[in-house]
Length: 244
Image (tube, rainbow, N blue to C red; front, side):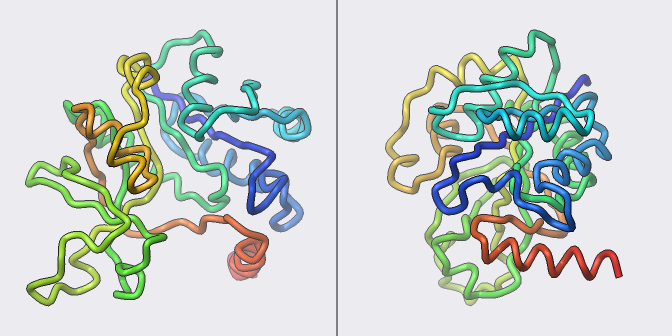
C-alpha cells in the first residue's frame, strides 16, 4: 500500500514556542524527526507547518514542506489539511509526532503493517506501563482493547479499575502516533467534538464515539517526547549517550 508520513510542526507552542527549531546536537528537532521517519517503509515523508522559518529549515536540508494555516486545532487537523493540499493519492497516512526526535522507524512500520492488514480505518500504538505511578497519572493515557486488538476506550483515569491487584504491565499505555486509511479522512474532518472527547481532552474518543474502529499495534518502547525546555535538556543528554 502506498503510504505517506506527515510531521505536523507548529511554531507557537504554548509551553515551548519555536520547539520544532530547538537544537539537539546542533540539529533542529524537526529535522531529526524527518530523518528518522525517512528510515521507515513510508513511501513519502513531508512536514506540515505554519511557519516560514521551519519551512526553510526543512527545505534547505532537502525535505518537502506543505504550508498550513496557523489556527488549526490539532496536529491531526494539520496533517489532514496538508494531505488535501498535496494533491497526491496515498492509501495510508501516518501522523508522526513532531516533538519526538528519536522516533523509532520500526514503530512507524509496525503501525503501518498493522493498519494495512486490519479492516479498521484508524490505527495507533501502545506499550505496557512499567511504574504504577505512571498508571495513576492523568498525563498518561490508558487504553483498553477487545480480543481482536481494537480499542474499547481511552482514558486519563486508571482503566480498568484495579480490583484484582493488577501490575503496571497489565495496563496499556497509549502512544500518540496515528495512522489513517485516507478514504475516511473526509468523514473524520466533518465530525464535531464529542462528549467523551471534551470530558477527557482526547481527540481519538471522537472517532470511537462516531463508530470508527481503531486498531492497536504493540511496540516495546516509548519515544522521548519534548513538551518543555526541561524535556529538551533530557533529550540532549540522551543524544550524548547515543553518540559516545
